[in-house]
Picture 1 (cartoon, rainbow, N blue to C red):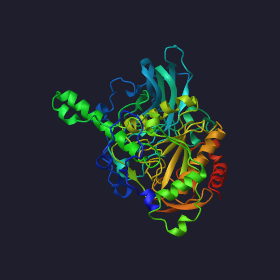
Picture 2: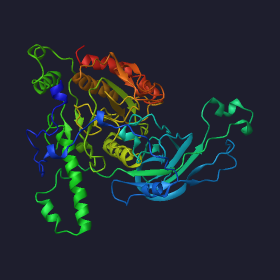
Picture 3: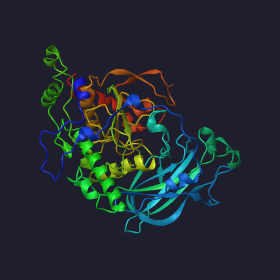
Picture 4: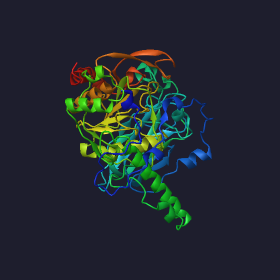
Length: 501
């Protein structure tokens, strides 16, 4: 086991694809950072309202795969619409914008919650047809890196709503209405608007993020051309900088591919599924250096490896994320999420949706990479999430307080009122049977995790959880939605059967 999980990420591939690629010197470029090195630091002083914050959130120049970041402004409420005293609504009047497909709202301080209702309507690109008002989920701290870790305390991190997939659009209108929390906010508990408690102020630095997913990037080279440094000296400073950025992105893409080289050829867009017998043979071959003769003869409880679309397969721009990888010790539990991005997408759009979520997590929310270790669409296809190797214990940012020794699986869509597909539930079972099996975990069992701090458990407390848990088991949140949470018992039973238990 240890030999497999701690194997070098500088592995060269046994059989390279017939692609116009230059194999990378991965050992020199990939620099994994152990989870233990995630330093605990104090958060910088609040950045609200500073010119630096405003400048940093400026929109990127338009290109396929970019973000428009628009500051919100006060809105004049319709007098016919009842509101709590002191409400100051913010938003954006109806306007034309560059094309986008996913939206979200961010603000300066991630520790400040947004108490209110966020609603948006969009115009389908080229059609002139406006949607009705759609609600954006205003979750704040339930996803993300554990409190006090390096990833959670950089000055890039922002508070944010969930992202919402709206499809290709070129017009937008937004309103954010502050509302008190709790049952006392319900008008039924009073006799009129004057009985309502005053709504809290909205957080500072509110901006609307409009994300264009861009196209597939899997045909991009994985490494710079030979002799690139000599050629660079002949270029002017601007071109040199652009070349350096391109080469850095190519090197990062090479690193992200090479960490899966034990399972697939370098540059592969998919990791092929295996039968259970094939998975067991692969497991023993990868762990032969640490397994004793007794264990080599034993039959491991491990499910068949599912087919997994790699980051290259869904078109990740590896230049967006921070370089290097971070790992935890092992995978004792899996937390199931939904992305809360709406279920109104076609499965052919899943790569675009994942690219959008990835860009939103990194560019808008300030995380080092996409937060989830894996994503699953409603057709049951499994996608690699945070970079570092699908078989390795990659440290994610999915369940605040319980990212260590766990993995996060997000089903694309919203599943509070919508029933998840049987294909998606089956994919959860297959993925967990394989990945948890690599670490000897029983999908129907219980385990203990140490809390890194959250709103349910104090930092340092040992918490007994299902090996396959919902996000709400580790943090007070509605995620993964009532209907998906209700299917986790079925997923546990299926996963155990896949493992041969």
